[in-house]
Structures are given as structure tokens and as C-alpha cells.
Image 1 (cartoon, rainbow, N blue to C red):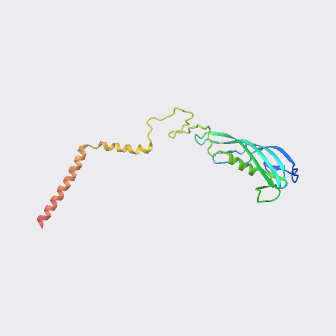
Image 2 (tube, rainbow, N blue to C red; image 1 turned 120 degrees about the horizontal axis):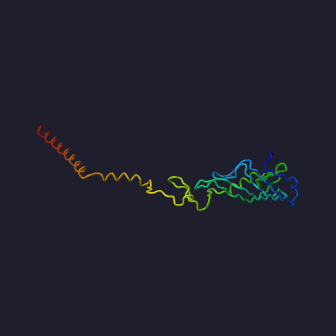
Length: 202
């Protein structure tokens, strides 16, 4: 088993029911993890305060995780940081057992998967810089918290902008409409003349 910063030796606790040990571990995160908008970055630090207790079927591990997650506000997109504080308790079994998800390997336990899973589940899916963040102006993109009086004059709802073309209908004059009527009248007269000529030929 390859050792990582999350690997903890438990040789002195194995098969000694009732034995207990406390240990503090400072980890420089080798690989970042999180969700799409916030996470624990590679190179940042996590503090793990452990209590390990030997039981008949394995070692019960309780961990308090402290650190900092970095990301961006989903409303105004500025960089933010969120504290990470997670409590974990898992049993690492001495032998394979479907009842337990984790096992002791070569006198060590690997806290990486359990730490990653717990931290990721604790992170917000929509982090904000502050609860009353009003986001960005939809027209120009300025951050509204930095410009509380920001507004655009004569803003037109784009859903109604197309209706502006209807104003051109008002430019039609009575003369135009009468002219249109005269054209239709001339066409009717021409058709009548053709009908009369056909009757005379027959």
C-alpha cells in the first residue's frame, strides 16, 4: 500500500481492545477536491484531530477536520472562502466484511477517501459572498453591491421590444388607404368590360 499524507500507522493499537490514542495531523492537500464552484485546493492545509480506539473487530476512528475551501460566489462571481469543519466517525475493520466500508491495510489506515467524501458533502452547492448579495447587473455586468444606486434609464424589456415596430402602422394615411381602394375598383371595372366583350362575341 502506497503511503500518502492521509496514511496513519495503527500498529500499536491493533488487536488491543480498549486501547486508545489521540493524534493531530496537519496535511498539505496533494490533490484538490470539491464540487463545481467551491472546494479544497491543492496545496492548502487540512487539520485532522484524531481519536483512535481499538475494538475486537477493528479500529474506531473519530476525526475533526478543519480547513478552508475556496471558490466563487454564484451571484456576483467574486472569489470567496468558506471554513471547512467536519466531524467523521468510521470503523476500519481488521478483515474484509461487507458490513464495513473501510479496512486496516498493512497496519495502517487511509483517511483520504473518508475525509474527501465528508468534506465534499459539507460544501455548499451555491456559495455566496454574503446572504444579501444582489449579483450582477443583467445589462452591463457591474457588481450591484459595489454600486447600490446603479440603474439604466429607459430600459426596455426585450420581450416587448419587437412591438416597437407596430408604431410604423400609424404612418399610414387616409390617402394611402383610399388609393388602395381605387386600385381595387379599377380592377373590378376591367373584369366587367371583359365579360361584356365575351357576351357580344357569342
